[in-house]
Amino acid sequence: MRLCIICVGKIREKWLDEGAKEYVKRLSRFCETKIIEVPDAPDSLPTMQALAREGAAILSKIKPSSTVWLMDLSGEAMDSKTFSKALIKGFEDGGAELYFVIGGSNGFSDELLRRANRRLRFSDMTFTHPMARLILLEQCFRAFKIDRGETYHK
Image (cartoon, rainbow, N blue to C red):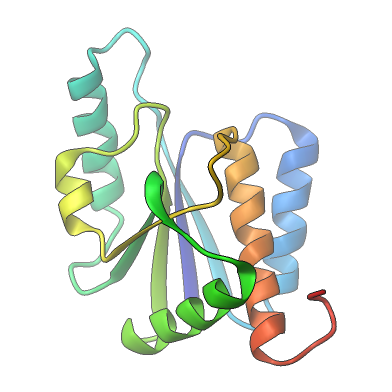
């Protein structure tokens, strides 16, 4: 199984980067995990141009047949157990490869929204994009542990 997480922008905070690397390491016993970073559009660009630029960069990294889930503020909310079931089913349905996308501060282009197979949100709260990456990695790790009946999840 291969988990690909496409992120707009880089992690600048060392502690968040170290946390993300730790969860990529923990996930390695369940799946191959790949983090793909694409550049964020400059704030000076009009919103629609920024969305189009970031959307094109993201779409260039995704195979046409891949399953794509967007982390979107207007997406579906799930608890960890429901997410675990959805993640495992997503791998089964997606040919053992699943893409998550964490967009830029303006959201997603219309083209990317149309391409998505599913849209999820962490909560009604807003998180920084680097924190969202760490939370997503942790929740994927938790999902595998739940699926296998292991003790991490409480």
